[in-house]
Image (tube, rainbow, N blue to C red; front, side, top):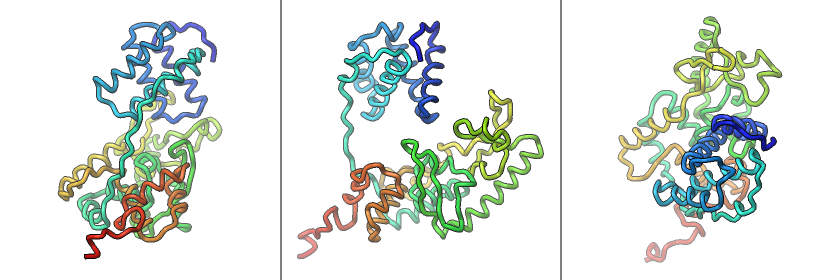
Length: 325
């Protein structure tokens, strides 16, 4: 990518998108980066190449002091600016490496007890309930569950293949036997819907990377369809095809919030809490910590070790002196 002048903000954002796709960044990361660059340009009010250390630090500081964003959000904004200057504008700006990153607060994850998981799941219904069962039974992240495709489910081996998870990594995790029959029935309904879409000249889905060019007809094939498709179609502007996206993550998030409210459990429970509970309950049942690391897809064992601090018996397996009285 050269540093040839661009005529507008839209051209700059397009270059960032093209460069990010070349680096195989996820669509959500690309969206976040372009959003932060747009906000920075609006804050600065001029060409980013004319901005200096003071302007960048002022922008990042304002995120924390005025908008009260989290440390991870502030660091994401910094990463977006680093990407723009290094990869698109080809201006390394050595001082940008020295900009202080916000320090993330290390917190212990919220975990439900087995009884609380049962109560919350009982309050849920439909596809969101089935998705929550997979979050808890397989340790999936929210978007990993939303983006499951039919080919990723292996009923014979009781496995789920997670494609392009966090960090762009693939992994395999368990498919709970308890949910298999229900998932099969769900897929029969989805397949009927897919066949109906095909009869109407629709039925294609978005394919990862450049697979659409390599396999032009794969987008209509059953194995590539979403396990949890959206209820309505949308018009894909580039191809002109009417497609069905996967179920939006907010559908599950809203259902979890409603179920938690109905269950009256006094904890801050989100869809990600099911994943935390999956890891903790496996650890409590005697599962090996490295096995749990592989199932969760953690690159570093230290990330998985956080769950040793939320066990019922304490991080070191020690007994309280009060319980010995």
